[in-house]
Length: 55
Image 1 (cartoon, helix red, strand yellow):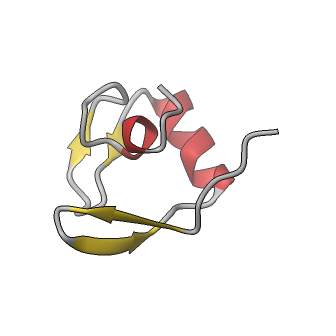
Image 2: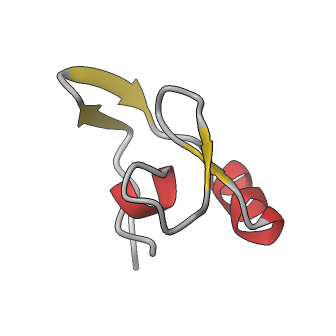
């Protein structure tokens, strides 16, 4: 079973990982946030889905 980390270090800062409901919403919406809150495509290298290895 895939287990998400609780935090991710990105660009020398630590961010709390979004919950599964939020990650699912981004997949359905075809847009995703970066840890800094920018809106990008889900397969963008800085998207949460990419950083977590989901895409």
